[in-house]
Amino acid sequence: MVDPKTLAARFPGDFLFGVATAAYQIEGATKEDGRKASIWDAFSAMPGRVFERHNGDIACDHYHRLEADLDLIQEMGVEAYRFSIAWPRIIPEGFGRINEPGLDFYDRLLDGCRARGIKTFATLYHWDLPLALMGDGGWTARSTAHAFQRYAKVAMARLGDRLDAVATFNEPWCSVWLSHLYGIHAPGERNLEAALHAMHFTNLAHGLAVEAIRHVAPKVPVGLVLNAHAIVPGSDRPSDRAAAERAFDFHNGAFFDPVFKGCYPESLVSALSDRMPAIEDGDMEMISQPLDWWGLNYYTPMRVVDDPSPKAEFPATQPAPFVSPEKTDIGWEIFPSAMADLVADLYRRYELPEFYITENGAAYNMGVVDGEVDDQPRLDYYAAHLAIAADLARDGYPLKGYFAWSLMDNFEWAEGYRMRFGLVHVDYESQIRTVKKSGEWYRALASEFPKGNHKPV
Image 1 (cartoon, helix red, strand yellow):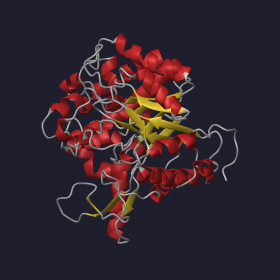
Image 2 (cartoon, rainbow, N blue to C red; image 1 turned 30 degrees about the vertical axis):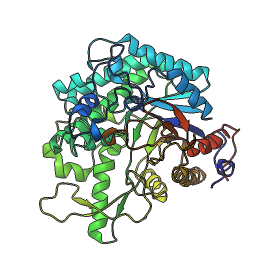
Image 3 (cartoon, rainbow, N blue to C red; image 1 turned 90 degrees about the horizontal axis):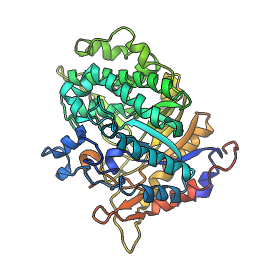
Image 4 (cartoon, one colour; image 1 turned 45 degrees about the vertical axis):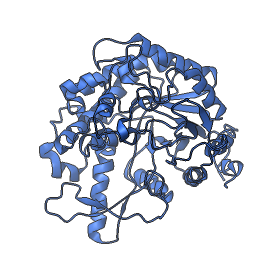
């Protein structure tokens, strides 16, 4: 087992270690204190969408167990907590009336973190769109981008004085492609034209929110969290290398290019422009405002080969076989070095600010035995990926911190509660929390920081 103190010595002394969660995955209380339905409440209620029709009605009951869970974060030895704010708690219909009890909950969360010396990294959107906005088309409608701007302004005006950082969106790839093209996440669309509309209006919403945040909370560093894909061609054939480049433009460039270059990838536009929404004057300037930081969520590489079928839609790729025999319980290939290759590639392609690894972790479903959870494979996953993170810091990339996904087991979207990513085990019937072996190890590592600046070894 990797000794946490030995690993800690490889990081700068001011490196930030944290844990991450998301509102719909842990809060529960979906019908309390003025909150109204999100698209995930509706999606979860539909047969065949979520494993065994699991839902977030109770989840980890975090809404009612806030103080105890904040104590747990403090006991984990971490310096920072990344969480998301539920839009349906703040503006339940997505527009219109502001719901004070919802803001009160996040007041308590922020005050509780401050009292415990925990830094706060908020995400404004982690997929829980107010259901009422679907009446106008949801993310396929420009009006939703403007509704999001107002929500960002309301949330930050109230909470920004106690935030250490804020992200506009978490993984727009998921809320665009996975939700509107592949149909796996809410709202479950399978339509390329709808997905392209969602792509542009999500990007626009990001830019409008950056403007709002800078207006009402100018001291809060603002960023964007992206699950950039480490795309690897399945062979050295020119056709597969070209396929990987197209896949990069589709899966990464659709979000990185507009934000960091002020345009969409040329290959995407030439292939799909006839199905994209109208890009109005000023849209790209709004989207491409400079950011203070960005977040990388990394779990597994994406391996692709060319799809030669004449009917293949852009990017015209097919999945390629895994290279590593090791995979997690959710079926994702374990390949830590791809994270380093991805970061190097992104900093070659774009002028990027400093960054955090905002999610990284593994699904393993071990239960409690004699009061303990022996999840050695998860510990090994963390140790291998944190070693890569240390290499990135050593090599001069502006990596400032790392957030483990996740603090605790929770609602894993379409997988329901059958996949467990937590450092802490949750018994969903009793709501008892049990720190896993990986959690004990991560606590030993995180507790070494901050320890005064020094150059990484």
